[in-house]
Length: 431
Image 1 (tube, rainbow, N blue to C red):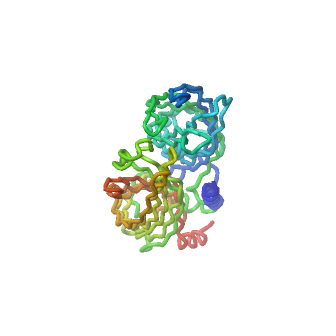
Image 2: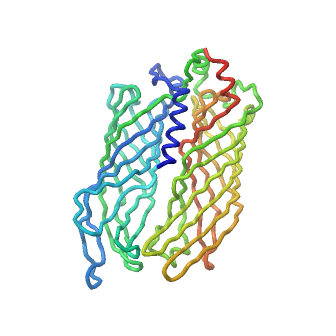
Image 3: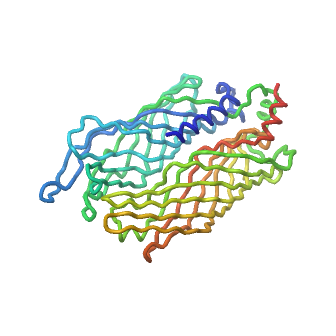
């Protein structure tokens, strides 16, 4: 939670420096996108769970309905037609618990996109449809850790709803649809039972949004930027060779391949675990005229599986060097693609009542980098909001002569990037 509050503070600091009310002056460069925070809650209805009861008989029980508060960080793009977001769970509040054993059904970090056929506009109700991808959890609480189960699966969720707002405030009412709601769920290390969770989950959210791309007290510069064509070169009007920058942003990492080791030894574990939330910290240099960026980043994700008294952790300390190139500039939306190489120190630990296993390994790990910047000021922009993804398809471990795949995608949803020399120059150019 402290990491989330720190990130919120960083984004609000950029808001104080750059913000003004969202403008409605047609499709201009500087109102292409705006950032938002959303606090809300999702409702999950009761469903039937299963457990091992007296004499090892399978018993059914009513799992209570629940409220699941969340924090969304996202941005409206393409002049209010698209919404990219990441959803972070905050808690789970169970309603009318009747059984001593119950299941926690909630989401880990979810990332998604919503489309509004009619662009968002103040004082107008706008429908949207969307889809999201992430990890959905079905975890079992128990008094003894021998019966605690942490089980998750990657899911595609569909989304439909309505949004209404005025200036910086909005409200959202929607429902998620889970097309695959059946779980082959471990009720013991060797027994799996079919459990159906609800297909529909309604939610409600309150949103605070702000314009982060139009510079305050720099209307002359703003007018010049708004005159750029919708499609242009990212290096247009670059005068300086390059600039140093610092970046920080919350990330999460998804393992996208199954592990042969866990399939054989720990089949009750989540097949494709997700990491904790961690910070991506970057130092880099942008070659303005070439449209190239060179970056060194540090990240420390941890992947955890824990069920039936067996605890498995993979801790990753990683420094990655990457080079990427901007492809084009569509009204400040500037995608890029590049290559990276990671220098990783991995620590594998598995603890149980029968066996303890621990080892370290250093790995050189090549991968791909891709993403986009919100870059209205091109090479003059002092603060940039960057979304980057890294794919490491080749990383793996060997555990007791079995393959343990760490094929993973890191997702850094919003990284705040600061160029000190550009900021100093921008202060001198204020109206």
